[in-house]
Image (cartoon, rainbow, N blue to C red; front, side):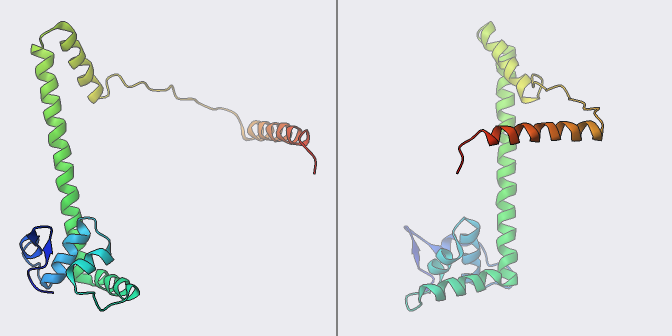
Length: 165
């Protein structure tokens, strides 16, 4: 494939990051496309010339490329980096929301606004979480077996009252 294969109106060569140690440009682009969520076959078709290949051949070659140690490590690295970025973005959003609620709690226009901000802040730290009381079962094994036998007998009786074949 040439360096100018288009993806929309932007060339893939421009989308690709610098080539990772030991990968070809096509392997690097394949890794990025897979990390971006494309399946192996779609990524393979976008990077390589598959016009003379049957569908099973594309599947086989895409799978083979994905199993290449260097390519697989690069995909894992890209996915991990994306997950870390998403985790950091989630923390930043939570920080901004919390800061905004704190501001509203201290200088909200009305008492209702300030109370609602305080309530929401309390919920973010689990202050108002209802906890079910722990249920402690002090029954012995013999008592549990007797209860189980009793329940099974009731189910058997209820099952016998149904329609017959």
